Length: 214
Image (cartoon, rainbow, N blue to C red; front, side, top):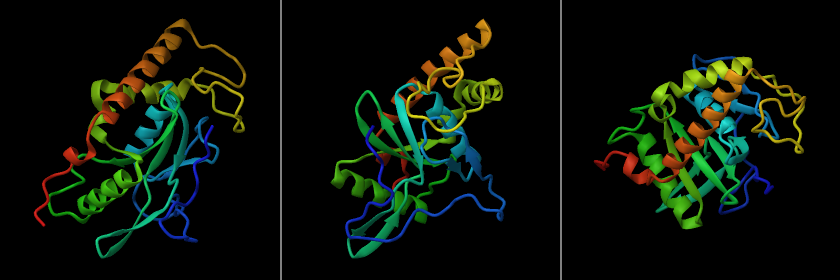
């Protein structure tokens, strides 16, 4: 499995992705017990937690890394710094894709956030890297998130991270099986999560941003 570097820049840099789990602030922050993440997966909003649940269940996702790499680059005469929310390894394509996870309406026509993401999209394209935007509306459609939350309440908690397990199984460490009903729900959820990810990856991220007024 390819390793995801901690820092990627045009020039050498000692900067590291910030620790997004803090004791202050009003945002929802926490750690997600991913079987696909070598380091503890972290989130700083509820929508990011939603996204991690989808990525955890989707069979096509082989590895997850949150706040994975720091990109520093020139955008015209301006130096920019950007860290994606999540990096995933897609097993079927043997590639790493980077995700920006946002609430609906996070980007407005003149917002700095939209301008920052436009610049990041250009940079990723120049590098030949895959980059996608995920919105809350993508994750909660058809009550998928409610289904996943119920399943994660029932699924056995992961133990110490291991590379020799199939993370798509219900209980890959101990081999326990759920009821037939829960197992069917788990299989259905895996199919839905993969389908959702495929839809997201077919989209042009530029088309998800409002037309700039600048």
